[in-house]
Length: 269
Image 1 (tube, one colour):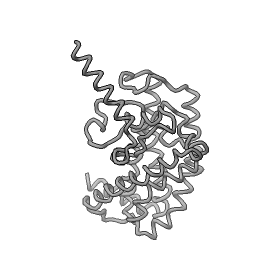
Image 2: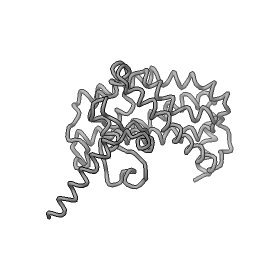
Image 3: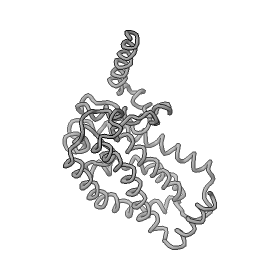
Image 4: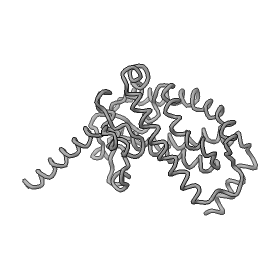
């Protein structure tokens, strides 16, 4: 497998420049992962499949789904792509490279863990700041147009928010100047995580059922259902920031009430 990956990578670096791979390649990778992972949830909602795992009973209209996709394409081409192109010189300056050999798995793993920790911290405070009255009204309310989120709504946001919270995703790689394959792995994991958090479904195989402190769809769906002044659950991937600062109390209380209700029903039967 490693030989196949290296062979494919050798083809890329011999046929495309570092600039093409880091900017255009990153953009195409992002779009592919994002839409391939997000579109199936639109199909599930429209077809009514696996509805017993849907967190909210309400469905989005066809017009709302189409509006989301149209705006996303506009924002991605008009904001994300120029940003990726413009940031290439800085990443290059910080040491990012695409040449072989690949970094060791220990280096890749340590960098990915660092990115998750740093992104969680920066995202939490940035997201919480977006829930102040003025910023919510003029910026973050765009993202909250969808009280019943689905996978693609994860990146449906005001352009200013795309830049603001996108900083949380790129700050780690910007500091460390990783190998391009590490950056692509981080991008893939981050996109899959945020799509899953907005998917609107809580499955038996959801990561939050197995991975301690992982938020997932149930955790973030609660955030979308409430008014901005009472929402909480501001964390990105893991929930420890909300736990530390007490901004998940409403969610934990609701979970406790549901759990007690289930236990009471089981006793009666």
